[in-house]
Image 1: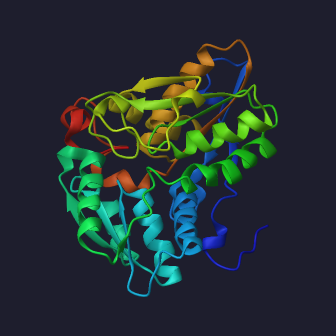
Image 2: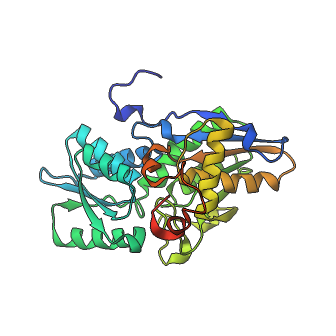
Length: 313
């Protein structure tokens, strides 16, 4: 289908593109699921749509309700866009050191943005959002970290899209953020094609990243089930940024730092295989990170930012 009744209905149906120049083994085919093709430019469009539809079905939205959500950017931007289209007020709690583009996009779609301490990352945003929700009955928090609508939308849409486009898939790689993408796709493949292995890209403990999270930082999303993973790979900010630059040069794909992290993990999986097919889900595009110099600054000069000065993923 190429004609949709609204921008919200255009979410999903993203392309799968082979990226042979990124594979370390010519006998291992590597494909990228380009989630930057969603309307606001990230995989979180799927999640935001599912979260709002879940609120609608449950009857939790009153005329004076305000949708409140802690976010590193992409989920908030998607909630703001869908809220604007559907007529809902949206307030986002975001770390104060996210990139300028993410903050501007949220505001462009009409969301109120409340800052949380950047040094506390996503955990700080979650804590502040919970405090705000407890103190004001108008706030309704869909809470992507604990809402089964998050993995369910990937089980119902992302996984089936991958299998339809790539029936020979042997392994799936995605970033570990809320856990929704990994859990939902894993649940689908455990049922539809049990032999597919599921791998996570996880940031190094201590890296102040957004979008992905280290489970060693003290918060494990309620929707996350480690038993659905076949393995995980720790990836540094520096390696993630280097990989996204390589992706631009080799394949002409302009992706974000978390996509770089996913590719680092996918290459490691490919290096361990004699042959086969890997699908790597690239969660967003690169334009939201231009102001931070992700594509232009010397990596050595960026060392302070890469070690925690900017929320990259």
